Length: 181
Image 1 (spheres, one colour):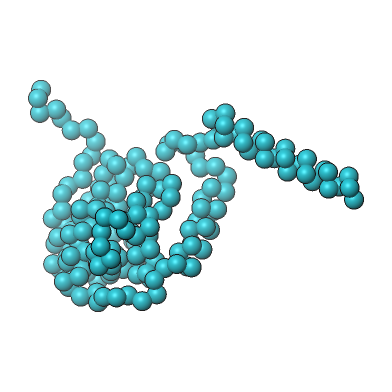
Image 2 (cartoon, rainbow, N blue to C red; image 1 turned 90 degrees about the vertical axis):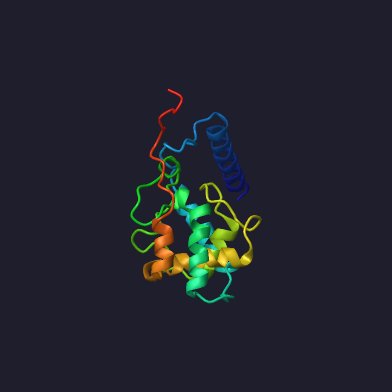
C-alpha cells in the first residue's frame, strides 16, 4: 500500500512539473492565431456556464419596450459593435484579430435564446481570456439591462432600434490610407 501511495505522489509530481515546464518554457499556444490547447474550450465553457447558472439574475427589472430597446441600440453601437458587429455588416479588423472570435450577435440566433439574465451577467462581468470586458464599472445597471434586452429581442426589434443599428458607423476593414500622403 505504501509503495502505491509513493507511486501516485511521484506520478502527480511528475505531471505537475511537466505542465509547469510546458508553460514556463513558452511552449503553450498564447497567440490569437494559435490552435487552442486540448480541452481548453471545453474546460473554459464548463466553468463559465456553471458560474453564470449560479449567479445570473432571475428577475428582469425593466420592460423590453421600444424606449429601452432604442437606448440599448445606442449603447450597443458605442460599446459592443466594434467586436460583435451590426446587422448586415462585415466584421471589423478588431473582431477578425480576436481569439476566441467574438460571436456576431445579429447573425443566426445570436443570444436570443439565452435568458436575458445570462446576457446581463456577461455584460456586467465580462469573460476572462476572451476579450469580453465587464461593463459593471462603466455602465449603469439600467444601461446593462437595456443592452441585454436588445440582444434578447434581436430577432423582433422595433424598426427604430434596427434603424439605429443599421445607421451605425461602418466597420474599419484594415489599415486606412494615410491622408498625409
